[in-house]
Length: 401
Image (tube, rainbow, N blue to C red; front, side, top):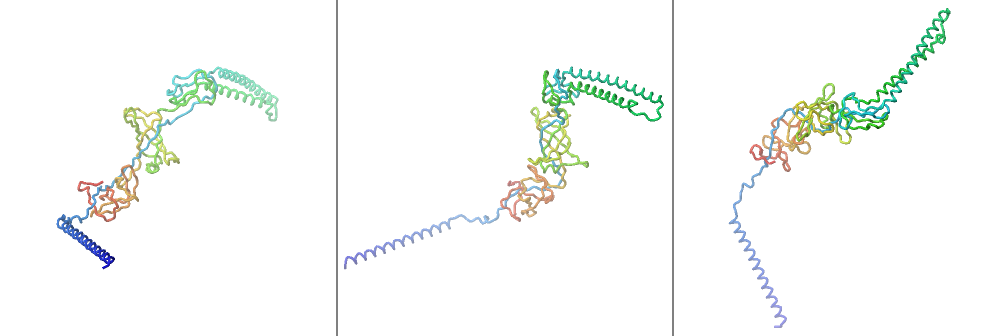
């Protein structure tokens, strides 16, 4: 046998041996796998058939009650004086005296002299006007005598026709009367100018600022002091357009509301009442807010200051309309699209569209869509569907919020 044939037979033998070994290994692996499976099946835990039962989600519910709701609106504003003015002189003169209260923060009474101007020139002008008046009245008296004499002379001459006005000195008499009247007006003007050298407070007021001092020249029309009333106050309260729609009005068109003002004073909260005066006729275009102007009333209970100071920032509670036959529900019960979830008598989910009249931070006032006794779902369910069954956990005492 040739050497080439011997090598071929040897290669075929090695190939057969490898095939047998691979078959034995694969068969061994399969047998081991089957054995492990049998052991696991025989020794594994029992199957809990109750695991196939449905797990119902627990929900918190609230029983709906129907009743009346008085709207309370929150606002805020700054206390302002109802009367403010910038006092100015009407004549020019040098300041010779100012009042004791003529200082920033001072108080002055109505009619009190704030500033006195030097009056020498005005007294002289009054004396001159009175002298001129005396001359004019003398000339008028003389002209009246001449006119009377002219009338008598005309009648004595027996004139058959009507006398001309010039012959009776009527033009001369009218001129004398006009000069006398002008002189009287000049005296009155001089008296008024002399009186204007004393600049007086137009009302009981506090002084915000002064613009002159002794020795300065106060010119006519220039400001002397800024005054404001500290006892007659008002506040301008901003309202959203939604709150604006809930204001209550009387038959005559005036606002009918109760206003309580609150502010921190001396480390504690002070309260004042206010009465509505008017509603601003224009909406603020920048903030889209309406404004209610109210007069601040004195605090009569002795707890805190009688009136708040001008410029103090206050919070306010404003009562509005009373909504009847509405349901108050927690705001978290509302869903997108104006819906709520109601749990029916079979503990199944029912979607209900509602009409929300008003929202606050915590509550929603529902006008339509809910009835007394409905069970409102307060729990935020994940992907709820109509007819889904739930457990009312409010009855079991284990709510899931």
